Length: 364
Ligand SMILES: [Fe+2]
Image (cartoon, rainbow, N blue to C red):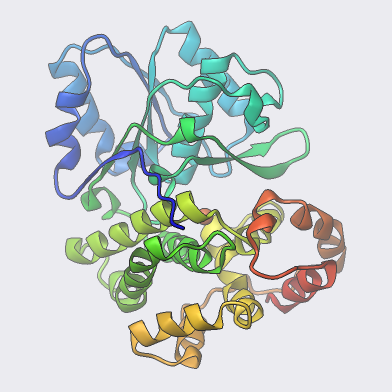
């Protein structure tokens, strides 16, 4: 049986925001633009949105306090600002952090949530419309029902999901990613790669998304290094953005796995990007899962016209490293956290404490 859900209206390509936001927003809307200090401005998105809003005489507010690994405290502050200013829609602009924050603000405001209620899906009955405009190619959140917000009480990244958090519209224009530096380009692409591979690992994997998985992995495998060496090449940027979108559509159906669960604590403790946290365990996780999904992975390698070891070599050549071993105390303190993360329900094999310990110990 196949099941496929994608309620988001997706616009992809050159000038898609300029040409299509205008007919999908009107004077009754009052958006809160949710973003960080830089990305909306540097990417050029803010200029393009404000031009449309001003031309149509649409009122708006800006909340630009979102940082990497956004905190519960900050999104509550955003929701308060949203309600106080009588906004009725959110526009998330940036990488995963601002868009996930926009989603969180939409449901906190929509349900007047308190404290940690956002993590309880039963409390979420309403959401304000969400528009997403990615300025990186990795997160996939523009096409998912998920958000990840750091629980400020326990300082841990916690993911949650509800169909109400699928954006109503997502606008993906590769030109907004042109200004991304090498490392962010690499790390975000590795996040997208992770989503695509996890779609294939997941217990909920479904053949309906295999064409996206195979073609998405191929786009990254064949074009990531070229993009890193030619950052302003719009054709290459477009390929990575498409792979990232496919990664999002895939995990919206399949969920993610241990690959993501195991990376969250490392991001928090060692202050590394989400994409790199996935990347440093990618080869080990693939090896661990290979016996359970041999046929599917072999089909992927055939599609790429390579051998398994060629893929491992390519991963190594991306230089995904944090330059040190994880300390034992950190590993022991986080094994239970990883095992209790909701993504672990999708693993294709049973994972026990010692598996997590071994994977963490291989990081360097
Ligand atoms: Fe991710």
